[in-house]
Image (cartoon, rainbow, N blue to C red; front, side, top):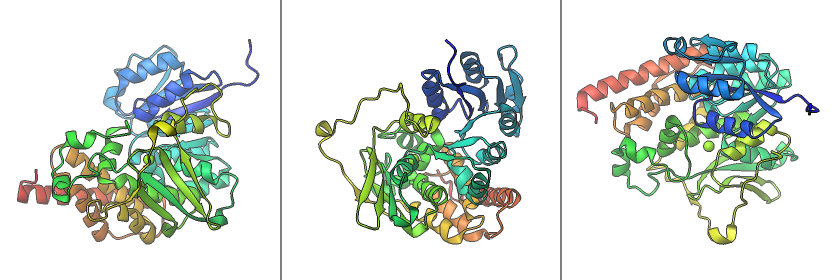
Length: 394
Ligand code: MG
């Protein structure tokens, strides 16, 4: 039978990562969604298998050396190199672009998607943290939807739907607290990569999982919430909730508080973003059994042990290119920790030092963001090299 409507064409940037693979799982079960374009960093083998399974018409591989070796199905256009994801977006004729790659590589393709009038499902936090001042006005001018995939922001988005922004008193993003939530400060400082990757409630990519252990993830999410929902920094709070079942609260001025709940699975917010404004007609997820769960717990963030969260508010207070500085410094510090070059406790210290010593430019352009990010990365590398050499850091 001929479907009444052509399937919604979806480009997935970062299809071999955690969110990308789960998005393909959602799409595979939905005849009204088609993965028309896929991009990856360097995992060509998985990308080729995904292209064969989905019938994607075009693929992109950021790592040019890896790209040429792929065994892609006949007829699939293969783009390679650092700008390949942006070129992919321009060629894809997508109705919606899901940005699920990690890191600062997300910004340029996000802007390209807006130029092409594709709606955005945003899983790449950095595109908003670094470039929210470019992305949100451009999206509004182009009339494209910006749909959050991050679970907390998907929750806020759902709670705000149908409500006036001026009626909102504040939003509260929840944090599981990560694998080190109950650890004393000195032990947190010495946490190993294995300790950090052992997340209690969420299965995620490596960068996000490390950011969840420092709680830098929440700093990034505070900034993300500012851009997505037009909220001031003082209206965005973070609350630790170890069960990860309530994803966010929206408190209205009249005293009413709406919360969104669901099991800690990214499949739910991914499916919602891909189907918005509908919900998946086919997805059958078991409802939360609150009687079996019995209790939910909430506690304030301990700013002594987890100083990263306040950096998100510091970025909003500073404005300009401060988000690019935070994002790039964190990327460099997380890589250094994952590579065994610095102790876990140094990640946030280095990011804070870079933020305190890097001038903020008030004019936000793609160029000023790139320059701020590159400068912050150099500054972070400088600190990592200096301290590592001086103190035998790890
Ligand atoms: Mg999140």
